[in-house]
Image (cartoon, rainbow, N blue to C red):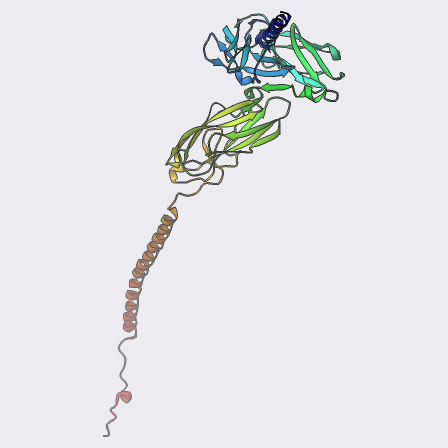
Length: 440
C-alpha cells in the first residue's frame, strides 16, 4: 500500500513539475499602447529547442503580418525577452509566436501562442526607446529615446552607477537622442533597470572576467536585420532589364545603423546572381557590396544577408532583352545615389549605335557606362567605305580640274605662235644660200 502511495505521489509531483515548468506564457508590461510606443514582452515556458525572432510576429485584427520596427529578441536564463515598436496605426493587434515546438500542459504541440493588445491615439506627449531590453557584456550601453507630440523633458537614470541625465526633446528633427549609459563597476552578473521617465528598461549585464563559460553560452541576442541595417534597395528591391550572357554590375550600399560592429554573410538564391564579398567581418558604418548578373533567362531571385538566425532578402527581378538600348534598372533609394559623372562613367548614345560592356545605374535611373562607350558593331567597315568614297571623289575632281585647265593652255599657245609669225613677217630669201649647187 505504501509503495502504491509513493508511486501515486511521485506521478502527481512529476506531473505538476511538468505543468509548471512547461507552460508557455507571454507577459506584456502593458496591454494598451500609443502609436510607435515600445512593446516589451517576457516569454517563458517549455519550448522544445529554441525560438528565433522569425517565429514572432505582430498581426492586426487577424489580418496579415505587419512590419515590426526596432525589434529584437534576447534569451537569458532560459527566458526570452522580446521588444518592438508597435504599429503607428491605431487598432486591435496580437503578438504571436508561431511554428515552434512547445508544451501545453504536459502535451507537446505546435499551436500558435498569442496575446492581444491595442494601439490608441493620444494628444499627450509620450516616449519610445530602443532597445527594449539590454543584454550586454560591455561596460557602456546606448539607448535611443524618441519623443512624440509635445516637447517634453526626459530624465534617464541608472542607479547601480549613479548615472543621471536630463534633456529636452521636441517634435520634429530633434525628437530623438542617443544616450550612453555606464554600467561598469560590478563583477559577475547584474540585473537592474534603466529608468526613462515613467518607463523601465531591463538590463542584464555579464562581466566576462568573472563569469563562467556555461553562463555565457546561455546568452542569445537577436535582431531583425531590417532594424539594424539599411540597404540602398528597399521594398521591391532591384528590377533590371539587361541583355543575356553578359556581366552587368550593380554596386549596392548597406549601412549598419547601430554603433556595435558585427559579422554578416552574403549569398544569393541563383547562380546567375554573384555577390561579393561573401562576408563582412566587423561590419560597421557603410559598406558597398557588388552584385554581378549574368543570365540567359528572365527570372526572380534575391540577395540574402544573414546575421545569426536573422535573414534579410533583397528581391532581384531580371528581364532579358535583345536590344541593349532597353537597359533599365529601377532601384528605390534609401541612401544618396551618385550621378554618372560622380561614378566616373558616361551616358552612351544608343540611338547612334554606341554600346557598353559594363553598366550600372545612376541617380537619374539612366544606364551609366563604366567601361567607356563604343561604336556599334560593323561601324568600322562603314568608316572604311566612307574614306574610299572620299578618295574616289577627290581623284575624280582632280582629273576633271586638270582636263579643264589643260585645254585653255593649248589654245593660248597656238595664238601666241600666230601672233609671232605676223610680227616677224615672211622669211627673206637669200640668193646665195638658195643658189643651186649644180655646176654651171
